[in-house]
Amino acid sequence: MIDPWSSRILEYNKIMENFGIKPFKEILGEIKDPHWLMRRGIIFGHRDYERILAAINDGKDFAVVTGMMPSGRMHIGHKMIVDQLIWYDEQGAEIYIPIADMESYSARDIDFKESRELAIKEYISSYIALGLDLTQDNINVYLQSENLLVEDLAYIFAKKVNFNELRAIYGFTGSTNMAHVYVPLIQAADILHPQLGEYGGPKPTLVPVGPDQDPHIRLTRDIASRLQKRYAFILPSSTYHRFMRGLTGGKMSSSKPATAIFLTDTPDEIEWKVKNAKTGGRETLEEQRRLGGVPEDCIVYEILLYHMAGSDNELKRVYEDCRNGTLMCGECKSNVADYMRRFFEEFSKKRKKAEKIAESILDKVHQ
Image 1 (spheres, rainbow, N blue to C red):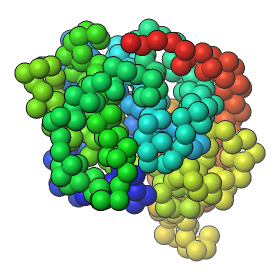
Image 2: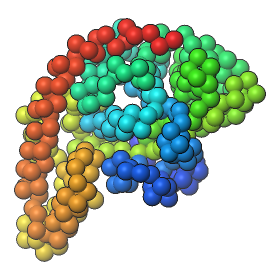
Image 3: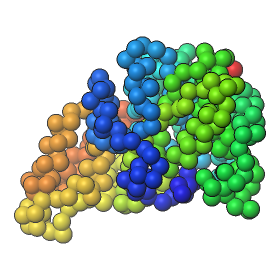
Image 4: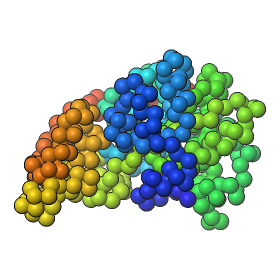
């Protein structure tokens, strides 16, 4: 069982075997100019991505749905979703970004006013500053609690699902509050409502997620199958990305400040965090020169792997210099800290400008 609300680090190969997720590398060669997250194996799995690829290649309509749950500060691990959305925007996607304030309320006990404020200050401002223009007509941002179409659709879905099924998928117990039990149906409505007549009818729809969210994908695909006669839904496709590890080597979490680089951190804070992150270095310099480092265990290298949008060749050079012992951890940390500082100095300026735009985004009507 995969629990979307737990903090466990998942074993990706076992997930693929147990839940029928296909390796993304098998279709990578068919993608023209793939995103760096695809090329570097961070996006590792998919379901029915062929439908999305065909829509891109044929210039046909397709949608991308990915939500944000305003339950805490946005950290750099969340950035990879925005990076993907920018790429799909360039491919001509309709983009839907539900703000999961209903899930935040039921699973995290955060009230709706606080969710709205978090969404604007932490997420929407950062999405804009990272380069995604949320004012475009093809991008729909909405609060779950204010989208009546989604809520009505979730109620219809509820007729097709029973508690035993939800318990089997999510591990719900008799003590689980009913709002939490209902949230997966809202998620399914978020994913499928772009295929309603009000939005142009059935179309390939992609949900890029971490593997912990796969229960929502499986439930939504089941619901779409059960309502084929009524809505003619196309089963949603999905891609799965690896989680960036926290600075201490475990899971990156908004609730554990020492593990994460937050997008609202100052450049000084970020530089300090990078220089104190876990590395894959040996115990002594002599041993590292002789044996080389282990970049696979290094959080500092992982920052570049996930977020250095430039040349793959430059990333490969860093990897090889670490492995052969010619690049020491101190030098590498200094280089990456400088890279991140420069990025966040520019990002902070953009974010201040974006705050004014972010305030108006949720005033747009998408129904």
